[in-house]
Image (cartoon, rainbow, N blue to C red; front, top):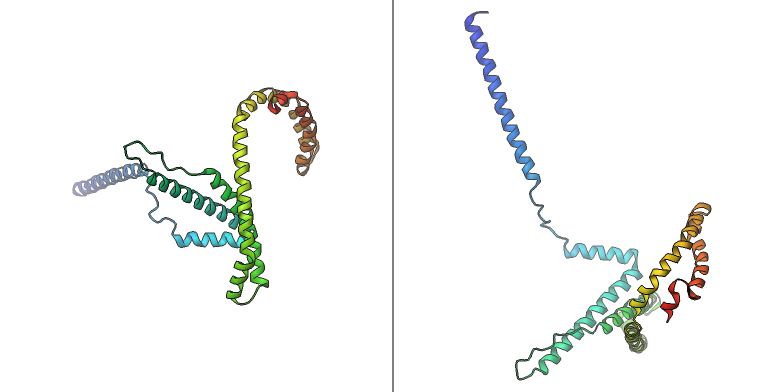
Length: 249
């Protein structure tokens, strides 16, 4: 090879080496930027679920679980209405009884007994009755919407209102009585004092019962077998073992 050709080839090799190193540096720089991009904070989804999508999901739940969905909806709506009503009522009372001096007013309160009473009635009683009643009315009732409304309002609505007020009074009385007994009887303190000995005694009985149940019985019989074992355990606690006498005082 001639000297000029050698110099020409050597220049070409140098150019290739230099361009390759520049490409690697560019790639390294690119890799660094991509690594740093990984640690950027994740932005929230700019497109939240639209109201129409929520409505479509709710309709699907109504189609798949009609009674359960109506019960949960009625309980939530009834509880919210009761809370809103008690809040507005207490706010109006505070505004009407505003003192002349600058004494601090009591904050608006929510009657939680009423809230739970309305939620229980709305979820368990009202939703169930309305579900089956409207199903029957749509199938066997009058063909006219006006006649169906008259039947609903004149025949069914008055007894439902009477039942609602009776249920609410019973629920309020039971909730208040339960709260009073819970406070007076020191339920938490007695339960904690009785739990210690009961846990120790349960470790002498239940591990063996559960072990032999798992070893010799099929899975479908686990609950039945352990319920049968609980007869002896309940009798032991009722007799006063494991601190059961302290909890029953």
